[in-house]
Image (tube, rainbow, N blue to C red):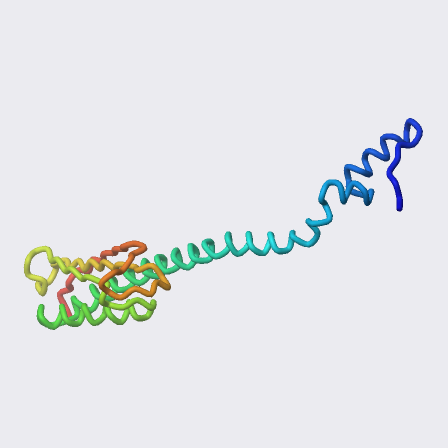
Length: 170
């Protein structure tokens, strides 16, 4: 059995450092260092999972909000363009709502969480020169939550508006 004993003057420091670094078998047993072998991999794996799962969920949630933002911008623009191309107000509103449904579906959002509002200036939406503004609001839910529609947690609400001018010639 090797013993870590002090050497002459310069060796005395070497012996102390070898004990501190755990190179001496007696010091390992004395200080309990032999029990810590191999635990770094377990600790790293546990901490990596503990930190990475919320980070990945955060990234997915932000990307859902961004997709919702892109969806309402496209939906509002298309709904306003479709609205001014229709001959009467009833058909125009139905066409605008259908355009919103299609645009939201392209980005993976359902039309159930969307609200469409149409305003005209002046009040006659079909008159030449009037402006039609379509506003689309979308509630973006938190992803991967197993709750039903009665208890829904939302990440955000996004909104976009688009204005088109009714032309003289259709």
